[in-house]
Amino acid sequence: MRVFLVFSWLIASLFFTAAISWAAETDVDRLLNLLVEKKVLTQDDATAFRADLAVKKQEEKQPALVPDWAQNIKLKGDVRTRYEWDRNKGQVDYNRARIMARLGVESKINNKVKLGIGIATGSSNDPRTSYVTLGTDPKQSNTPDSAKSVVLNYAYGEYTPFKGLRLIGGKFPDTIWRPTDVFWDTDINPEGAGISFDYKLNSKTSLFWNELLNVLRNDARTDKQVFMLVTQPGVSIAINDKINLKSALAVNVFTSIKGAAKFSSSSSTNSLTTGSQYKYNYNSFQPSLELSFKEPFGGLVPYAVLFGDYIYNFSLPRSATGRDGYDFGLKFGDAKIEDWKKWQAKIIYSKLGRDAWLDIFPDSSRYSGKTNDQAIETQFDFGLGKNTSLTLDYYYGRSLSKSSGGGRAAAQVLQIDWNIKF
Image (cartoon, rainbow, N blue to C red; front, side, top):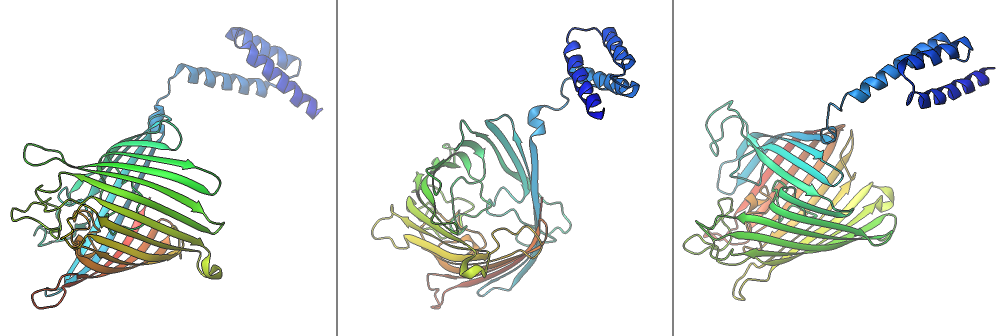
C-alpha cells in the first residue's frame, strides 16, 4: 500500500508540474482538492505543495540579488610577526620587531577572465619587502606607535582563451618558474604582461612556456626607457611514481640598461660609471633544475627536493669579471606546512658575481640583496596548527672582494617568524 501511495504521489506531482504551465491558479486548487477527495494526496501534502509553488513563483519574479562574478570572489591573506637580528662586520648588532600583512581578492568574472587585487604593508620605495618595523626605527622613522603604510601589492587581469594558456596584464605574481629566491626576491611582483602555457605531452611528460615583459622604467622624458623580457621554455618529467624532474632555461634580455641611471632600489654593487649610470648590459642565460622525491631513504622523510640555478651574463665584455652566479640546495620534510607537527628544512648555498645579474632583484635578506657575494641560508618550518606555523631562517654571507684591510666583509641575519594565513 505504501509503495502505491508513493507511486501515486510521483504521478500526481509530474502531472501537476505539467499542468501549471497552462492551468490558472484556481485550476491548481481545484486539482489539489480533487486529489485530496480521491485520497491520492493528504490535506497536509496539498498544503505543502501550495507553499512550494508559492516560493517558486516568488523566486521567478525576483532577479538574482548577487551577480555571478561576485559569487566567485575568493579572499586570501596572511600576517607574519618577526623578530630579526642583523649583524654586519664592524657595526653594532641590529635587533628589531617587524610585521607584515597581506590581503588579496580574486574573482572569476566569467569562464575565461579572472581579476586579482592585493594590498600589503610596506613601502613603494622598497619592492623587495612587505615588512614594516614596529616602534621606532632609525632607518625609517622615529615615531612610536605610528600607523603603518599599506600599498597596492598587485592588480591584474587574467585571460584564459583555452585550457593551458594564461594571458596576464598589470602588476601580478611572477610568471617565471624559479626553484629558489636567490636571483628574484619573492616579494617582487613584476609590472607589464605575462604569458604561461602548459601542455601535457603524455601521462609522464608536461611541457611549459613562460613569457614576461617587465616594465622597469617607462618615462623617456627624464631617462632611458628600460624593459625586461624573459623567455622560459621548460619540461616536467615523472621518472617514476616517486621521482619527478623539472627543468627550464630562461633567457633574460634588457633594453637600454647600459647608460641608464641607477635605480633607487639598487643594492649598489653593480658596476657604475662616474655618473652613477650602469656600466654594462645584463642579458643572461639562466638554467634551473629541480629533482623531487616522494618518501626517499626508505620513507625516512615524506618528501625531498634537490634544486639549483645558474646565471651567465653573456653581454659583458671579455675584460669584465663577475659575469656568472649559481645556487644549489636541498629541501626535505613535508611537502607543505599545513597542520600541527608538519615540518620542513632547507639549506641553500649561493655565489653571485658583481655583474652577473641586476642588483635590484636578489633576495633582500641574503647579504642585503647584493651581488658580488657568497652566502649560506638555512631554514626550518614547523606547523603549529592548521594554517599557522613557525619559521627560523638564518643567513651568513661574505663579500667576494677583499676590503682595504685584506678581509672580506661578512653579514649575518636571523629571522624568526610566526605565520598565520587564511
